[in-house]
Amino acid sequence: MSERKISSVGVFCGSGGGTRPQYIEAATELGGLLAAGSLRLVYGGGGLSKNGKPGMMGSVADACLAGGGSVTGVIPTFLAGFENAHPGVSDMRFVGTMAERKDVLIAESDAFVILPGGIGTLDELFEVVTWNQLKMMDKPVLVVNTQGVFDGLAAWYERAVSEQFVPADGGGVPVFVSTPAEAVERLIDKA
Image (cartoon, rainbow, N blue to C red; front, side, top):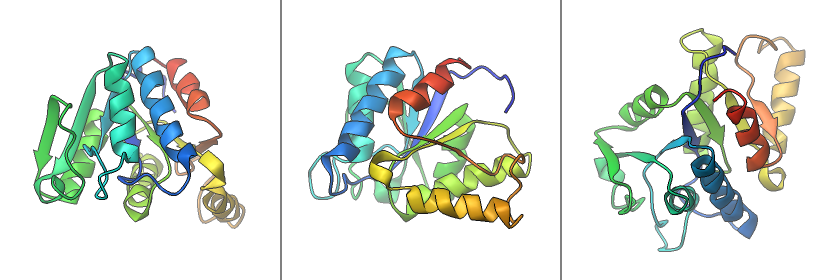
C-alpha cells in the first residue's frame, strides 16, 4: 500500500448485533479507538438495529461520538427507517441507492476496517479489495476476525492465492487481524 496519510476510516459491518456480545464489544472498541486516534469514522449510517437493540453500526458510531470523534454516515433513503439512521450523527448523507452508498463510503475513506456482518458487509469488502486489485485505488483493508467469524473467509483467501486466482501481492487480499486495537494500530502508523 502507498504511504498516503490516513485521516478517515470506512467501517463496514452489520446493522444488527449478531448473537454474541463480543461483536458489539468489538464495534464499541473500534469506535472509541478511532476517536482517540483522531480518525474520522465513515460508515453506513445505522443506529439501532431493526429489532430496536444496539447494532454494530450504531455501536461503532456511538463510541466514536462519545469519544469526541468525527463521524460521517452514508445511508440510502429507503434504508433510513429499516436501519434506523443514527440520530446523533450530524454529517449524515442520504443517497438514492446502495451503489451510491458504496461510492461515497469509498471516496470518503482513506482505509477500511471490516467487522462482522452479513452479505452487505462482504459485498463492501469485496468491492474495496477488487478496486485495490484493479489499481483503481490503493487503500489499506483490514478484517477484524472477532470470535473467528471470518476464519472461513481467511481460509478461502489462502486457497485462492495458492491456486493463483487472487494474486498475493496485487492488493486483492485484505489483512486479517484479531482485534480492533491491532487494526487501528496499523492505521495510526500511517496517520
